[in-house]
Length: 438
Image (cartoon, rainbow, N blue to C red; front, side, top):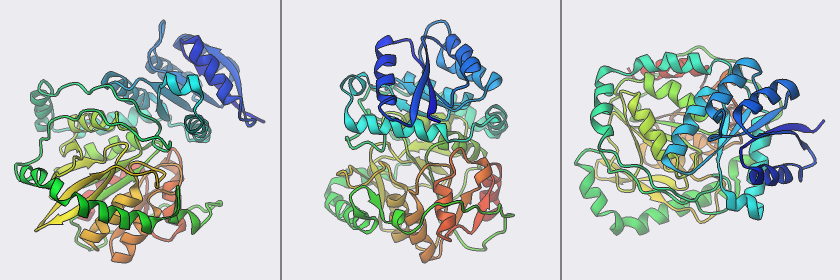
């Protein structure tokens, strides 16, 4: 049976084009179209679609409220479409909190001209979301995370919010799309003063950074768009038993996390529950360039860790979490006893921008056996090769277990490769990090 799709959008033009694109794939069928969120809820209950595409901003009932009602009445996988503004990004994250699985930037130009790369990305996203696990416990998960925010973090948010400018609108595409992702103007860096001199000398070492990136990408990619890790296994039906936490006894100088579909909510379950660690934390989440700054600010407001979007030239500081910027690659270079972030624009060789494999492979060159790495929910196998490289160096690797993943792809890859030392439920990852680092 074809995958049944319900389209919820107030634009008749968008609904028409979206239907044409979806039904160009013989494995999918549009079973209904709703012009607002209320109609979307009613048609979901009546038609029981396999997946819903949902606009964020609509009359009568907006997308966020609609998702909440759908999850309460008839839980169904939802793919959100949102504008590329700061407000659109903020609304999208609220929709994910309400229960939506994933999102795509709403680009009328792509839909109107049915660009091949955008069409493929859209169809792939709908298929991925349709096969994902609907999280009925999203609300309780988030409410349990928020109490971890300390009064100090709340006060810091209140005093810094007024100084933060809005993000500029940017034109972007899905991270897997072939087109280059544009990045909006970023907020002023709040890193420690030590990073300022590094930024000023960044251009002098750009050649070295590009050379390092080429070595890493050549190591990971044998054919354009096909990570080396993808050739080493097939997913099959392999399942891993959830393991009880056991301390490795190793010393870690950095924590690294990779995630994709379902990752934003999983990260909100982990980062806000961590204390201000005495090491840096690196996060690579597949996300468009116009969303990572908003996501970092959002996490920063609910965490004891200081959360920022990584910027070229930043020096890694303990107690700070760096989110890899969407549409770019994040690698690192040694500067004396410090480590500096280098942000590179990929030339189309890699499927994901940012790519977990690239960042993890770069960390392996600097930190050797002293990385605590983990892979969370996500489609595909990104992170498998990077984790394999870290594992060979002696670092410790964890995977999120299947039962708590929205999509059990990336964690399954490292389990299949025999790289994961622990397989943990999402809710146990933050306390396990604290125990491991103590």
